[in-house]
Length: 326
Image (cartoon, rainbow, N blue to C red; front, top):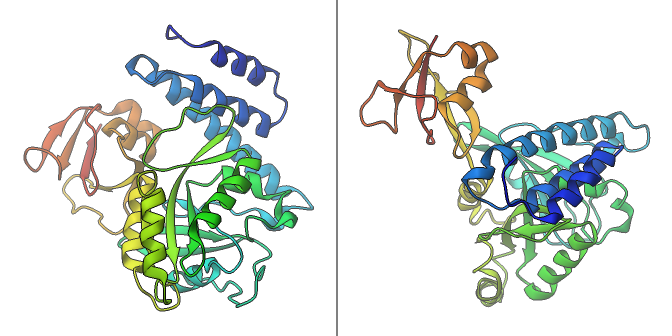
């Protein structure tokens, strides 16, 4: 156990030990994580807690999926990451999902047309990213199931209608998420405790509408220092490629390709890892035997030269090709 852990950590740890449900355990673990000072001495502890969060989150999702009353609201994670679209009525969330995926959400000019979560898979280069359309964040009818869905997401896409007052929309979303004990984070880490911290990207939609340019500049002026912001028009298809690239960046993942000895690399189905992952993490994701018996690895891509031997601790980069030797 690393030294200098604050009292808040031990308080949250006590809550964790007393927790009965997966949701309570995740909540306490998140509080423990937020209380831990960030330095090299706490890396292993934070990694351990994150693995427990993932374990109990998955258990919670399975529990939700098998529940008789809420199984329709469970969305299994698929692809390289799960992005949930958050917004007020008529922001254009459904239209965006329809524009960039094969899903068919109910796109309408009237508010509250989305009643249930609607997932769709968005292609980005050689991977797919899952987008999930949900009812407007102010829809009280979604409150029983919405917190669990949002807390399990990899990224929140906060959608703003550029034809309307952007500040009112942003502050309303923040207030509603706060009620669910969820805090969107952008470029800066948050130290706020007892909340779920979720990476977020702000998207200004309806960039084709008159007056949208001024509203977008106002949005950037007010929130650009905190959040990355992208302007699009889901209806006209403007800015969608830029949005895809920004979603990929915000997910903080990398694509690593496998290569069997004497064969060409498999560039069609990359292994998806978190940014900062090592050769050891890659081996573990392939199979536990590779992790246990790994002698060395050869790297094509970010090394000094192609075929370079690298250690287990070597940090991988997007597009690297790895050949594992056991």
